[in-house]
Amino acid sequence: MTTTAIVDYESGNLHSAQKAFERMAREGGHGDVIVTSDPDAVRAADRIVLPGDGAFPACRDQLFDHSGLFEAIEEAVIKGGKPFLGICIGMQMMATRGLEYRETAGFDWIHGTVEKITPSDASLKVPHMGWNDLVIDHPHPIFDGIKTGDHAYFVHSYHMHVQESAERLAHVDYAGDITAMIGRDNMVGMQFHPEKSQKTGLRLIANFLGWTP
Image (tube, rainbow, N blue to C red):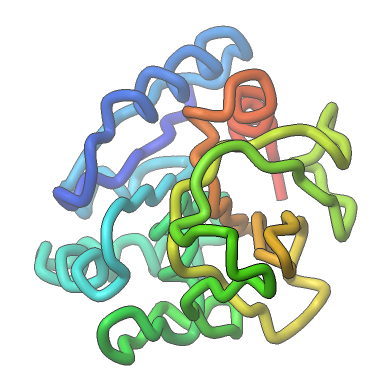
């Protein structure tokens, strides 16, 4: 029986994410979903999900305040090669650094910088909030049953500039490109909230749960 660990480091309400992952795990026969802040449980899990709401520096501080939690994630993902999914700020923390409020080091798993969204059309508000159409940049198993034009739900003021174009899997247009998904090896990240993205989001969650990189 496989286990998917959703990391709880007191950074956002995990209830809706938990329900969506539990539903798709049940429907696809993908084992158990646990919400945990226990490093040993994270190490033992077969896949790891890192959500995050709020500001980049606060989320990073929260994660690193929980003794041994980041180390357990890094051990499982980088050394152990276990599938990893970062959601919203959880995705942004995969970057080299974030520039929200102050320069903050990220995990540096995907080279890039998280910067404020600056649409070329001044009438477009920041945060970028609501539904937007995904544009798939590179094929990936996570996109099984997903196509360019499918909608995802976003709420964010900062976005990631990815250094290696091959590691930007999808983007959306908001008077300029905004990175929607990133990935390499055994890790992927989603800037949007899959648990709030209805059919598209549930399909992506199911694809992640069945993904064997």
